[in-house]
Length: 157
Image 1 (cartoon, rainbow, N blue to C red):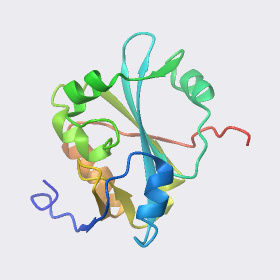
Image 2 (cartoon, helix red, strand yellow):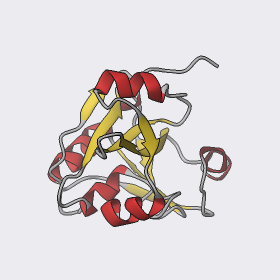
Image 3 (cartoon, rainbow, N blue to C red):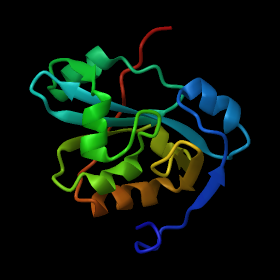
């Protein structure tokens, strides 16, 4: 889909990573902004994908209140696979290509969009694909999703 949209991208191979810490070690050589992606569910069973800088310590309670979600919990792995078609450890905005019913609301960290390029897993956690912030937005919109761009609330250390 990236090629079909004319989106420039570069993919790097590396050992599989399942956590931000593992990613920092395996992907330190990859230039650009590194990210984390949280698949969340609220009390009304609405689904959310929060995409942020990997270093940001997100205050999920404040974000839930700000977004009208009430309270967030992490989505079960079975739900993640059902809706986005990826297993835990491979969550990525690229998986929105699998959410044909647009069940997932996408929240993007405004600060992340200042980084160029941005790095995400390409539906698997043994590779990282770099694209520009503008192209990320174009990709998300092409999947039928409307990203909500905001300053994500940070937790105190």
